[in-house]
Image 1 (cartoon, rainbow, N blue to C red):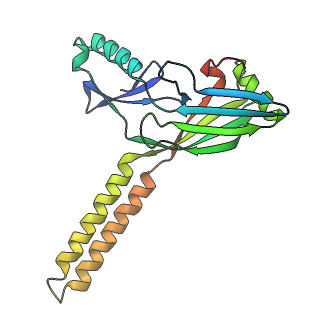
Image 2 (image 1 turned 180 degrees about the vertical axis):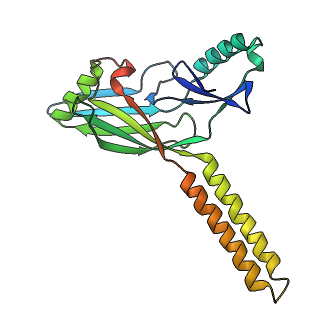
Image 3 (image 1 turned 45 degrees about the vertical axis):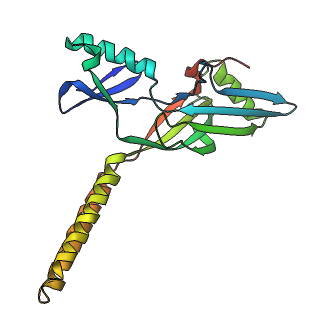
Length: 220
């Protein structure tokens, strides 16, 4: 059964209490090596410049804390707990501003780094209204600024590639017999196509969302 520890979702692998896949529940602001938030907002006249780097992942310190707690719960050592990242991948990220009541609009998009912890960098100039919304978020008010990551399953792409290779192998075998070439080749192609269509139906796009008010950023 899945469980949540320290804002991280944990899923058991093959029902083994010592093996878990993990994924962050929501994005966060990225930190420097010194532990400082990668967030800068500077006002220059009527324009405010915003520089922000976000992440969707779990840092090493949190993983070690989770590993220790799982070990205590399962009566083993922390070294016996195996934690692996989930196959969910984070693609494009969007910086959004809201109206304070839950409705958000995207103002900037960025491609993630492509690997955990999926950093995404935003650099933009805010008008007066946008700057006020950002300040509301810095003051801890929800509904004014957020980040949203698009998520996809890594297993889907692997499964599709496997089916395509299998289909090619079947077609190669079919040319051995002239009388059966058309019949066998068509069957293999139809089978592969049906399998791919089923997999596409199984793919469910997901997203990870975080309100910047919860990041504890300093009020600039």
